[in-house]
Image 1 (spheres, rainbow, N blue to C red):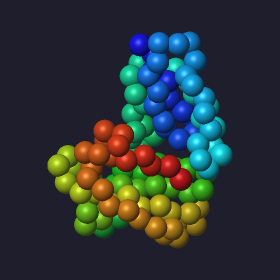
Image 2 (image 1 turned 90 degrees about the horizontal axis):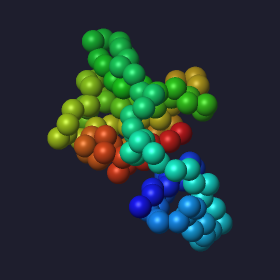
Image 3 (image 1 turned 60 degrees about the horizontal axis):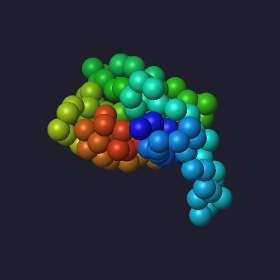
Length: 116
């Protein structure tokens, strides 16, 4: 059994064939697959510990549009397993675009896909 993942949307396909079935989605999106050879990608790859000021910490990842920060639910400490976290999206001028809350275990496990 081989595993493929879409490089755009993260959709996974398991198949015996050399290439996964490539059907367009209802929104017209057509997945571009690559083979997963070393297990699923780390959903927190690229995030680094960051001092936000005032003794607060976060996980931060720079993006083309700005950056993403993940904190505990209070917004002042590193996210912890078994607890809810806040995922904030910011533009290049540090203006908040929005945020969502999710269990950090789902974020670490890849069930919550983060992109900006």
